[in-house]
Each structure stands twice: as structure tokens, then as C-alpha cells.
Image (tube, rainbow, N blue to C red; front, side):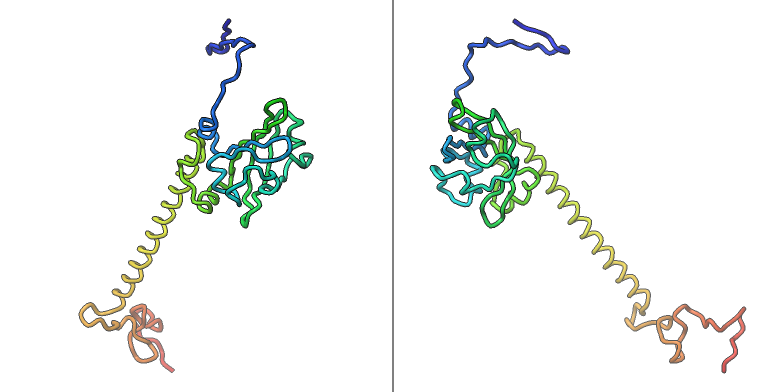
Amino acid sequence: MTSTLKGVQKVDLPSELAPPDLSWACLDRFMPMNMLVDDHGLIRHVGPTLAKVLPERDVIGQPFQNAFDLRRPRRIRSIDDISKQAAVRLSVRLRDAYATQLIGFATCMNGGTLVLINFSFGISVVDAVARYGLAGSDFAPTDLTLELLYLVEAKSAAQRASAQTSTKLLGQKEEAMARAGSDALTGLANRGRSCPERGGAHPFGRDPRRRHGRPGWRR
């Protein structure tokens, strides 16, 4: 049975159709920062990218709160609180030297006995990439993180080019001023740069005491 909404054809699937059975390899490809935690709060599976940033490499079987500081929502104190809800958005910090912030979305599986969490770096992704040595292949192909990294790199390149241009123009200006104030043949300062108190020409090319071509009165 089908129905149409704004020109898009929607297929009503049979209610008895079972959800797809994904392997861990497939899940890790789609969500490389996923984590599976049981109802006792123990970590049972970690995605490849998340494994690179965790403070301990071997976290399987370890308590969730050994690796993460659960910050929000404040009503959530443990994995057991999450397992009592269908889905919840999380904010955590890694228990490492950087206290890197992660955002996550958790949902229950197997009648609440397992919790699947998919994490993201959010706005801290640029620092995280440099901090943990991550590359584009560490993120899902559809993740907007790749586009964000390209934009940041393009902005940095433009800023470097602008700084180099400004430095070059400043150097050219100083060089032009030096050439204008010295003799091209000898390299000595010309008369326009000599000191008036020593009897040389005024730096502006004439004595300000002269008025209408007449010498000013000297005291």
C-alpha cells in the first residue's frame, strides 16, 4: 500500500518486517563513534574512532563512567537511568587530560538491557582532530565534519596568504621610503633628509621661515 505526500511516494512496510540485522563492522562504518553499554553500565563495544580518543585503549568490560563524565541532562546519573528511556541526548566529557567534550544520542536495545550511544565532537571537532591525530577516514562518509575541516583549512590558508601579502607590502613601503631619502649612486642621505639645525636643507624641501620667496628674519 502506498500514499503520496507532496509528490513523494511513501511505501508502507509490513508491520511484521524485522529490522535489518547489522554486523558490528557495518555499524562501525556508519557510526565510527558508537558505543554499546549493558544495563550494568559496562562497556561492551566501542567504534574505531571512539577507541582512538578514549583515555584507555582496553575499555571493554570497564564501567562507562570510568571513561566519561556524564554532564547533561542532569536527571541522568547512570546508564541505568538511560535504559529506562526510549532515547535521550547526552553531553559528556572524556576523563583525560583534555576533558574533551562530546555530544551523544542514546537509545535502548533488547528491551532495555543494552544502550547504544552514537557520539560526536560537535564544535570541538577541530581541536579533537589535531589533539588525537584523526583523519577524514575516521569519520562517516556523510558526516559534515569533513566539510567543516575543509572550511577551517581554507580559512587558515587565506589568513596566511593575507598575512604574507601584508608583510610583503610593508617591506616594499619601507624600501621605497629608504630609496627616496638617499642618493641612488652613493647611498648617502640626500639634502632633503639632513638636519636643519646643522645648516642642511629642511626635510620638507624649504625653510618654513621663508614667506612668499623672501627669507625669514633671523634672530
